Image (cartoon, helix red, strand yellow):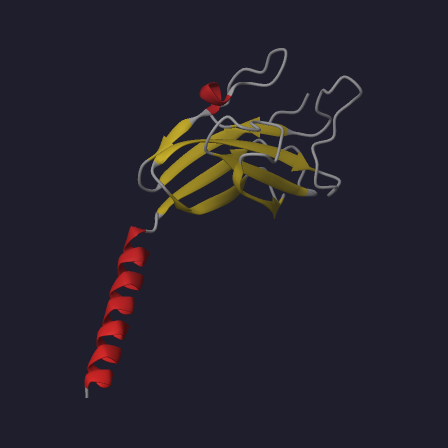
Length: 148
């Protein structure tokens, strides 16, 4: 009888821990809408950062990423399970499906690209602070693809 009672107590405790962990999981969703896609071929790839480490060109610091087919002049990507906080997104139009942003010998992109907040692109890449935005609850942002 004592064994049954202890087993029941252990199951109840484990169930309670699992339930409280599930409730504590972040549940914010970020929707990114990319407009001005010039050609409906290849794919549009996304990288989501929560700090400046690796932003905007490296995989270091990427917390979620993925690609979607480039169909039409706009695409939508969703990122789930985010904590409330500050984020930035980089996007590129991988027209030849080689999984990278192709550049010329000077490092200038030969494929389309976009950055959250649509910051002006000058010499060098924008900083995380110029591209960052807040996610608190479900959030939608719009960015414009650029081709140089």
